[in-house]
Image (tube, rainbow, N blue to C red; front, side, top):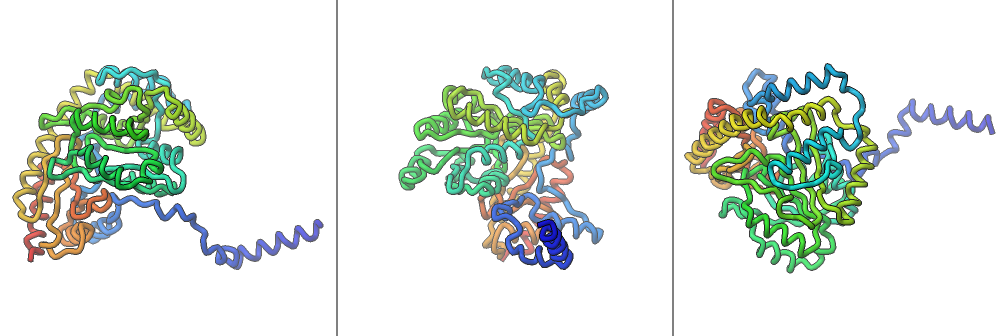
Length: 431
């Protein structure tokens, strides 16, 4: 027996040495791994290759606020404080108590919504929350109901776990609004939809359009979820970045007694994307919400801890209302000014039409692809990058072919340079 085991060991060594074993692994990568992609970075390699040749690239593809607005000093000071005080250990897997209490107090203060700190679960950015929720809810063949254009990471996470999607359009002709009657009609035409849909996901304020849904529309969304027994998820990462007369309403204000979840974090409103702290709030006590919280806790246990010093810093930032509100007012005023400037400049181009946003910091113009003699919005983005060094994101990744997303948080000088180059590009390619 011992001699036989030694022979097998030597045989395996030989196989690995000769590469025979690995050559036989024709399906080495998992089937689900093919769904791991990020539309925001589709042309990153091309952009870097252009820069290596000594040419300038204007990167307007990724919503990284900290590039254009330095993370506020009060947040940096809180981070340094947490590091110096030795907050570098593994934290409680679901998040430190201080941060969960701060999140609870924030929703009470801003939206009059009351829930205990145990209802909040801290994640490594909203991206991890998207991973958690699909891992917990989606089996092969299950579905989600989304509205396009949607944030580009929603679809990859859903498909990674074998999910499919039913998509309904935001109405571009009505400033990207939703129509409940049309959603109901879609449900009636697809009888199997109600059995398959596990959750409905909205983004408000919206990325990539910058639209802000009004209270009446959100009430319709909540009633629809209630009537059809669908778990409701609202990504509210831009909740305090609203302007142009918009007023934000949290789903948590309207969905009391209905199973729902809020996604949020430090990346946008607190201008700290790189610290990678997000959170999920499940305020209700129904059976489904309780089961999800328990499963999310299991996932948190598996990954040990989110960034510990960042959690303490974020808790301090939320509680430092005076400093936060001062920094936020200045940032939102600048964003509004830049968005207005960029939208007006884009609309001077006869091949581009942009609806002025009321929240977040993106513009999502419709491109006259046909008149520009291009096959797709991806071709538009790729050629624009190659010829003019302006890097946008194709609308395809957001579910809306024929559009492109522009990050309008950049300075007016950068935006003017980029949009002038877009206009030159369109004139050169127009039929």
